[in-house]
Amino acid sequence: MNAVPQGVARRVLLALTFAYVLNFLDRQMLGILAGPIKADLHLSDRQFGAVGGLAFALLYSLLGLPLSLLADRTSRSGVIAGALAVWSGFTALCGTAASFGQLFAYRLGVGVGEAGGVAPSYALIADHFPPATRGRALAFYSLGVPVGLAAGTLFGAYLAALVSWRAAFVTMGAIGLAYAPLFRRLVRDRPRSGSAPSTGALGAALAAVARKPSFWLLAFASSCSSLAGYGLALWTPSILERSFGLAMVARGQFFASLLLIGGVAGVMLGGVLADRLGRARGRWYALLPAIAWLVTAPLFTLGLNAQGLTAAWLWLLVPNALNILWLGPVTTAVQGMVPAEQRATASSAFLVINNLIGLGAGPLLIGALSDRLKAVHGAEALRIAATEVLAFYLLAALLALVAATRVERDMIGD
Image: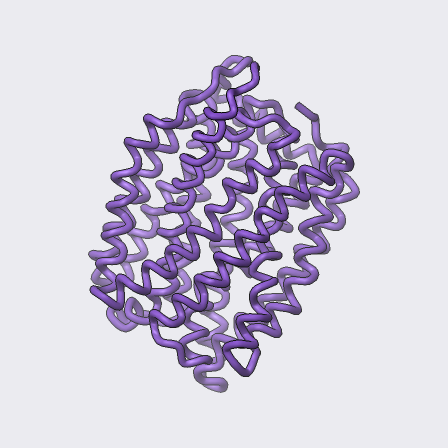
């Protein structure tokens, strides 16, 4: 394919990134609003963990592959625009929930929508940016994670304090619905050199990555990291309330500042290092996350168990950067393992594993552990449960170190 004009590539990247911000904003609002939602709907920690993770991950993971195949066969930008409208509509409906069952069902719907967003976006970015700058482009797109998490935390806290938790969901859902048609006008697919993949191409794309050991190692390593990371994203606001006594807006400001400062720095650092080191030696796509995860676990432990707010913020800042540094290197490696026409499908296979394990299990596991420990430890049960789950970062680092021995052989170039 011919090179894309820089202005066009940047416009596409900015439009995709804003959609990704909305993606994580809609996810994260649930965490900051845990207190009023649990009180209003009478939920246990286990039930709230299921709503925050399992409900979203089930259909998100199930529909990710077929929607990505549809994107590879038809229009990637069209699938993303449709997904944006669906997840935004269900986000708004979350504000009308009157029971655990209704909220669970609406979060299933949010997952249905978001299933069609991320993998086709990875593929569009790979189509618009050459290998030399792809890591930075994917890292810039991944800024949607910390920016969306921070925005969801902060806006959710202020809207809930000023109006109600229900108004927060309705407002953010309406913003996404308004953006969907504008996105469709801003982003267009590039012509592809190969023919559109058939239904059988799904098996071909899966077979292509299934034969690559580093794909599985990186997928499971990222899943272990996401298990701890998604769990902390949902439950940290509640830890700030129960263990540190912070009110709604104060804990929104505290957590949002960590996510924004640390998260943006970590994502961009991962992208820059991936381009500089990964181009020379592909093993760095795995070594960079491994090093980051090894440092993340002990620093999060110190931060979560600090005795004061200042110490907690300082200890938590660096791991909030390092725990998502993997996004640029790992997604770049996955894009480099398959031909261009299979990128969305391969990315979706990766995301199915990552979200079923990470998003599906992380919030639920911390919530279940908290309920189990509550009889003995009271309000501190949640902080203890979150600390125990940090061991998954060490497992992630071990898997990534093994992947570093294979990743260069598994990439096919461009």
